[in-house]
Structures are given as C-alpha cells and as structure tokens.
Image (cartoon, rainbow, N blue to C red):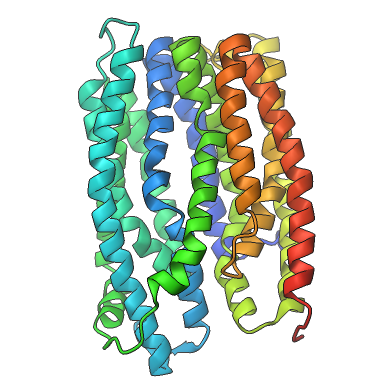
Length: 459
C-alpha cells in the first residue's frame, strides 16, 4: 500500500526518469547550496563572501557569448531528430536530408563555441581585473587575482563543451545528460565544501569548474556519446542548416532576451558591491544562491520537456502539446511555491531561535525579511514567465523579445539608480514591481501567440 501511495504521488507531480535525475541533481544543488552556505559563512569572511558571489555575477557575462545558442541547438536537433529513428544505441537512420542537416548543426556548434570561448576568456580577464581593481576597498587584503584567472579559464572551457550536452538533449538523451549533470553536481558539492574546508578560499570556484569539466569529458568519452558524435560528425553533408536564414533570425532575438536576462538577474551583486560594499553584496549573493537553486529545481520539470515539446510541434500535435504543458506548469509551480515557503521558514527559525550551525550564525548572512520577500515573489512569478517563454520558443520563434528588452532596461535602470539612492531596499522594490508588470504582459503574449500558431491542429 505504501508503495502504491508513493507511486501515486510521483505520478501526480509528474516525475519521470528524466525529471528524476534532473531534479535529483537540482536537489543536490539546493542541499549542497545550503551546506555550501554554511561553509562559505564559516571559512570566508563577510568581505570574501562578497567577492565569492560577485565572481559568479560577473562570470555570468558568458551569456553575451553563448547568445542563447544552447537552447536553440536542443530545439533544432529535436526538430531534425523527429524525422529520424535509432537503428541501435549509436546509429541514427532515416532521411538523408535530416541526417545531413543534423551533422551540419554539430559542425557549426563546435566551431562557434570554440571561437567564442577564446573571446570569453580574454573578456573575463579584462573586465574582472578592471572591476575588482577599482572597487576593491580592502587594499588587496583579499587575494582575488589568481582565483579570478583560474575561474576565467574554467568558464571558457566549460563554454566549449556546453553545446555537446545540448546536442544530446535534442537527440532525446535527456535522461543520460541528466545523469551526467547529477554526477557533476554531486562532485561540485564535494569540491566546494572540501576546498573551503582545506583553505582554498576564492580559489575554490575555479577549481570546481575545472574538476567538473574533467568529469563531464571523461563521462562523454567513456560512453556511447563519443560514438554517436563521431557517427553524426562523419555523415556526408549534402544539406546544411543555413545559419543566416534559419538560425540567425531566431538567435538574435533569443540573444537579446538572454542579454536582457543578465541585466535583470545579475546586476544586483556588482551594484551592491560598488555602492554598499562586499558584505551587503554577500547577503544578496547568498539569498540569490538559495532562490536560484529553487528556480533551477522547479524549472527542471519544464526544461526536460523541451525535446518533447519540439517534437510535438514538428509533428503539429498541438492538442497533446498543450495538455502536457498545462500539467507540467502546475507541477513545477507547486514545487516552486513550496520551496520558497520552506526557505523563508528556515531563515525565520534560524533568526528567531538564533540557531548556530557549524559554529556559525547564518541569520545575518541573508537579506533582511522585507527585501528577501521582495526577491521571493518574483521567483514564483518567473516560474510562469520562464515556462511560457520555453513553450513558445520551442516553435523556433521568440515572441518574448520585446518584453525581455523592456524588462532588462527597466531592471538595469532600477538597479543602478534605486540602488545608488536607496540601497538594497530600492533594488528589491524596483525588481519586484517590474516582475509583476512582466508577468501580466507575458501571459497576454503567451495566450495570443498560442492561439495564433495553433489555429489548426492534429490530435
């Protein structure tokens, strides 16, 4: 009876193998994040914590180089794979045209990411040294230069291998890719906590990236993935996916949306670091780390369905598409809301009972209640916004371009100016208000475009 009840609950919240591995990885990330928070608080000073989380915000400028291509690769591969079949574990068969286009996409992806990984590395070095040199008020008491160099190297190499995993997800290997990410995330928790315990300080971020990369490459080379890549790579290319005509018209819109996302989500720490100092930036960073973990977890319900959505759209099975999406959205929203409430209660009990964990009091390492709530509300609303955007983008279109640009500009202005004059309260009030506006606008776009694109459907 207990087993039947467990299965019933699992079915209701929509956990399949792909979601299980992906979610488990996100759970480990979330739990690891909690443990990491304890280790960061214990082994880094408040100032070092500010550097630690600001490192992550600046590294996020890789979005300017990836330009949303990861998601595009997954979708375009899925559209081509919808017309192909697996002969065995490593061989795809079917129409020569679609096999050729698949191979051309693989060639293009490898070349694109290799080139931009080099440019990213150079940019990170320049931007990082300029920013921290200007705003480092510790008079170089904090050793950040070599750790930043190490992190830049790891980030650039990671960008080079990113399209490989995206490619396999498009081929329907979502479960297998999720396993790889599960192993990577598990190792990451060990490396970060172990590194901080061993006194690695800010070096731990770069070390974590590099060890994670070695693991992923080893798992790819030692599995059927390597053979699949070789077979697809060696397919004679007679029909190509035309980047200028097919990908670029879609990508430039996605790219602008992703770049806008940087100004929406990643400016908080650098602005607070520059205006209120490393300690407040560290509080924002730790709060965001927990909230981003929640988003990452709840969005796994949606992201694992991208290949399926793309396949159904390619076959014009819109009724089935909408049914699966609606169910998945409800499940992911429930997970998101539950996790947010749980996080708030944890922080409340830590502060109310003045709990000391691992010899450290964590209550003062998070934002105060009001700004924390003002950051939590957008996380819940963004679950819907991101889901609607995912659904629509699987059609190889980007109707969220304008809303992304407008939101990015508003958040940028709000963060910079309100942050300058009103500090963390100004930043969080502005961000929360803008997200409510984006939620309403986003829902209108979702309904309009879904009805417009699905005027005829196949059940």
